[in-house]
Image 1 (cartoon, rainbow, N blue to C red):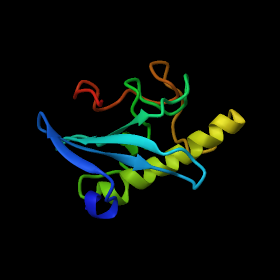
Image 2: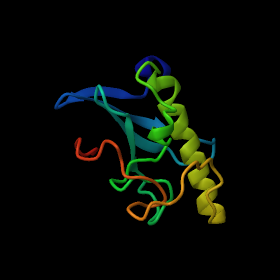
Image 3: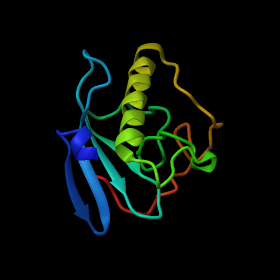
Image 4: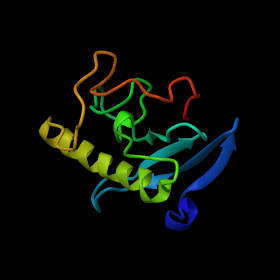
Length: 134
């Protein structure tokens, strides 16, 4: 479904993990962000911006630099959901709010959690230790 809805994305299997890479552009004048989505069964999908580099201290990132798209304890994503209709649109929306943060200095996107001292404005990544995105 991802390659059908996002034809510019590529797919590879890396050490038992499904990895899709491609570009998203949240607004017509936005830069094109190259992202990688990793998904391992019985885990949560994770997304990392490969380029351009995100600003230092960008909010809503997990400690490993992946995007904080949702709060896993609230279960907004389930394995029966399609990454193409949830994670990738949520990523584009995260990038939109990121660009607003660059302009205003305030995170205007949804935030259902308090700041955890271990992260940049979020929670410890439930996938931490599952491998790196590059």
